[in-house]
Length: 132
Image 1 (tube, helix red, strand yellow):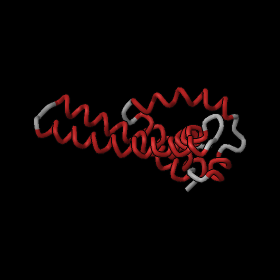
Image 2 (tube, one colour):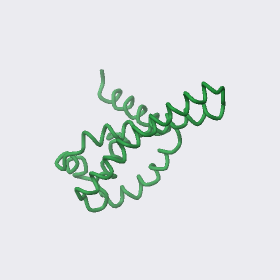
Image 3 (cartoon, one colour):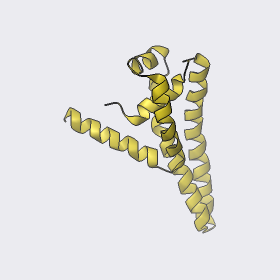
Image 4 (cartoon, helix red, strand yellow):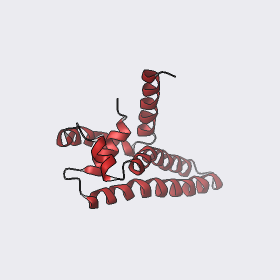
């Protein structure tokens, strides 16, 4: 079974029409989302720790959780960046139907670490089903 992160990345990269422009924009969204959320999260967390601010610490941790959600998407975007890899990933998929279904999953990106945890659960499930 394909991981939810890989399928979401593939669908988001492809969109309805599979244009090169879309792939490029979504690729950079994932990569810059990861980098920016990590950098800002570290800065806010460090500031919160230095000022002994519970709010700053929580916001920093929240941003790092959002960065953790972007990590699997950025990794899969790198793997699926080539059009042939993306087409192979979506070969037997009803793209419009799956886009509607996975649109709901995109909201999980803003709940810190939720998508990262789901991705780890998918990896664990895949390892169990394929054996050691």
